[in-house]
Length: 567
Image 1 (cartoon, rainbow, N blue to C red):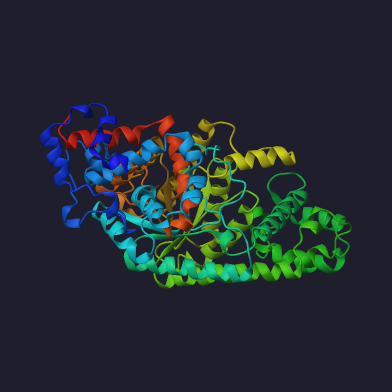
Image 2 (cartoon, one colour; image 1 turned 90 degrees about the vertical axis):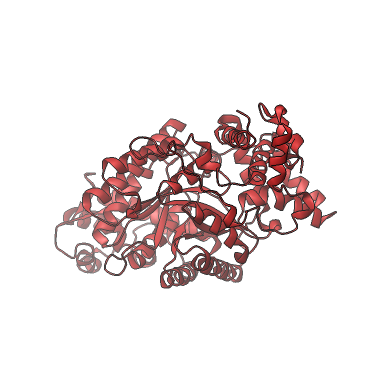
């Protein structure tokens, strides 16, 4: 690897003046050569050699870590790790290489699989992944723990879609892994259950205060999720039809009037439905009550009485689809039960908008059981909200209200989003308004305001809700810390977690961990051949980041120059 050679240092500003003493220092760091990368375990030094540096400049006034201090973010890394990181970022800045990385791998690996896999392991895999198996994760997690960072484990194998466009870039600060799964069979979904269960147990064994990540499209047919999402959206539109005056609630009179107009069985069904919808005889029903009482499984009985076939009838799931939905739910419950029994928390990934209502429906059901305040001191199940969506803040406000009424802990991971291009293209093709914010500034504003709203909810209402700021955006991290201080929320209270992807924004993660905040690294693992789509995506995102910012690259270079004694 060219960036593990001393000649690579000449690419760094000021590094052409490396002295003999500097070379001796690098030799003492024991930079390995290519043939020593046969193991898939990343380049983590023995823990006794990890240097957790303290500095008077590591904390800004007011308790905000000094993210400009390169020793805080990178001081615990060995020289080989720094050189590898710099090399990976530099390589990611060459669009032709990034654009063709998948083709290059597929072309050369059959010719020399051992050599190619060794090169990948020594570079991108070693930088972005924790290992090939759960047993190989331990050195990575121990290294993170030594700097006050916990792990979010994720088996990163995925199915690469055939139509991936390598030139498409995500919105800045995409901190959502966005794995993809092609549906093969129910048997394959059962296999994915075992994969996720193994991940849960890996968290228990190597990172007890960590999380396991889960993607719902791995547990059932995505087309089924889309069908379920359509059914949920139609039940919402039904509520809007019943809300005649548009005041956000349906009165008993509005319900009677609209039901009689839309259904033929009003005389027999109304006496049965009204007590169910309004059990406390308040005279009104809002959408939270409506959605709690009217689930997709209730639609077949409801639409049987429709006067005419409309969108609601077309969205109604068949008996076969309801059976498959229950199978998906059973798989999810099996994983969640194991996680709960072993005190491992689950992060449920967000996905495309045409799947998300169904995902939310499943997650809310899990939260009612596994985040119940009467049974759990802290939440087990975290939902994910993509704040590049225009409705993100309203959805979070609604779900905060649901949690209060339902007596369970609200728990959320906030990301900016992972499917911006695809969402906009789909909206244009189908002729509906794009669900994505029009500008990046709008997304930043939504992210910061939504996170602050959830944090204030905990502080002002005395709940045990928790949120995770999964962001590579320094401004968002600093702003939410300012709100913590303002609301007198302590870093060790459990209210707030910060997370970044392994191999990215170490200046944020390590500075936060050393300052006592709940810091996490998203740690993917899996066989090299299986995680290549993930690694290619990381390279693509870094290509966009290094062109637009370059902050991390500059700080890594600064730390390397500091190590060899060059200002």
